[in-house]
Length: 238
Length: 258
Image 1 (cartoon, rainbow over the protein chains, first blue to last red):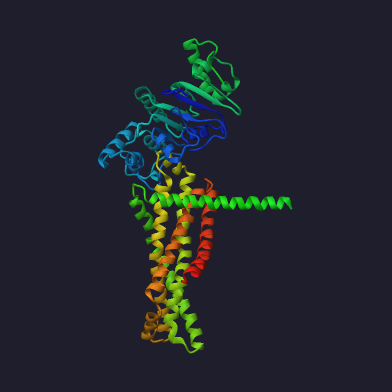
Image 2: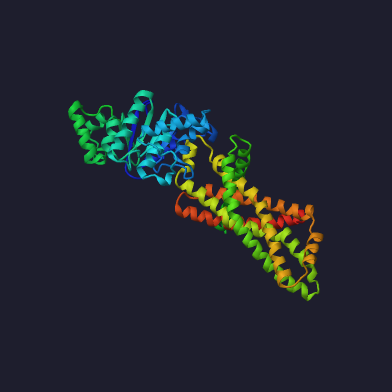
């Protein structure tokens, strides 16, 4: 995966999208093969060494993974409190700014159980980006969000990607949104994967890709294909 | 025959491997105590959960156990014309044996299981992985304060249990059975020695607290990350910690004479 790109992981349930994200984060080890992040092989590293690498990685978990016993302010501010020398008021200010960026205001004193599903995911998203990581791993970032907030998160991701060079890896079933923002699509299958840009895959004839994308994604890609007049996918590779 | 030997070997290897993992986990908890930040706030909160919230149960149980013990012993001692020894026997039995053991079993059921359930739920909802992804060690952040709180809470709860149990026995022996209050008190004071009995009792309960803390946090960390796994781990904590308390009680008694 290219540094500074937005990579979309596709695949049916159980093909290993979330597992692959966890491997990139060093939470799971591969049975075979090697995972390298920023040129550093993760296998064989101690937890403390992995921790140093993880300081540059933000991860949005499927269910948010917010700490139940902590308020929104404490949850989002936790990485800042742990890894920076910022004072409490500086942390509160930074947390407030990030929460505003994800469309949340005045939720700092609330506990996770007091939030709706969509709010919870946005708080988790805020926590994932509060340290301005170099790599952001997002497991279904758009699920449970209303269209307005899908657009808000999409714009925020694209802005972070363009302005700060954030590398984003996403798993999502929100086809049109994911395809619109992604630089590279990777379709995971049982034994292999198909990878390429949206344009390349739009011009390809891989039935798995076409079937997986469904009407929503296929229509988007067809429109993209017509607009850009893209030929057969030379660059697509497995 | 070969299959049986193979199974025995596999079981033994699993057992040794499991004990090794627990030992490494325990070592990591101890190591994290000397690493910053101190997590004092989390420790105080865990101490409140494990200690303060257990006081009512411990006090009530202590008083009840004391009442039963007082009644039983009074009847038995009366048979031998030794009812004046009630204070001494009750005091020694409670301080040296019943206090730490019964209190340990109660704390396991009340606080140890809660710690396992909490950590197990955190694991099932990926909160522990979330901490790891923020480069925060879950052992340092979650397990250490709770294990330490259980270790510190146990001697304090043991002391409360013993005080209430002695009061319960006093209530039965003196108020109910008519034993002289001064006889009960002087028997207790003469028989119990601080260094040999009280201090050793507190030390014993400290060891039990460490064991409960280790078992409870380990079971939470090692459970399967789903509702069934958390339920199994919680049950397993109660069973394992109870057995460990009873076994270590014998070992401590045999080695230290307490």
